[in-house]
Amino acid sequence: MNVLGIDGCKFGWIVATVSQKQIEFYLVEHLDKLENFFLNEAIVGIDMPVDLITSNSRLADIQARQLLKRRASTIFNAPVIDALYEKNYELASRLNFEKTQKKISKQSWYLFNKIKQIQKFKKEHVGFSFYEVHPELSFMAMNEMMVIVESKKTPEGKAMRGTMIKSLFPSFNFDLVRQKFNKTDVADDDILDAMAVLWSTQRIVDKMAEFVPKKSSSFEPRIYY
Image (cartoon, rainbow, N blue to C red):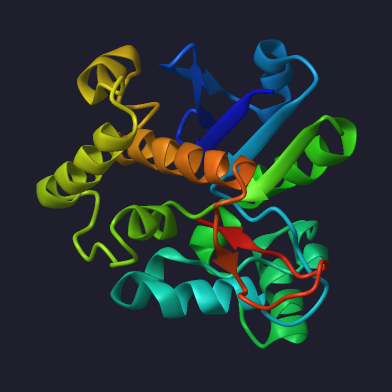
């Protein structure tokens, strides 16, 4: 069974996986293209809301912010499912406010297409199991549950995260991966995030992953790390 770590990028999605102890990366413009590489099944960790609810804010988003403290702004509010299918930003934001008392940020609105891809892909490809993973929570877990306050867009933050990934995946070579993709398609932090998501997804497979909300029903959306 393939284990995948996926992060959104300008091109579409960057996919990290391990094959014969070597890290492999793929770029796919749309999630439908995953089946071209991984046939009919995979365990997928993805940095994007996976399970949406019909009203109120998700406890997973609230508790993830509490864990990340100074990095809480990296967690955005997932939309309610009805807002996802509104035809424009104003209508989506208004409906979301009616259901949750929170409007949709423009940043969230620009991710709606990717969230829709996940909803569609889950229904049409039952052999793929999707889990929501947030990279900053993953890096926190790698760092003995201490939040990395340095942004991954800074040299210091990038180096810290790269070092941790290298310790966990000795075959990972950031420079070689960087040479493989254009920066107009994939940012440096997209590569690091895909690896962090891959790490947490393997922890899910190994039944070692943690998640928020800490206490939840089987119907409550979870964010893993």
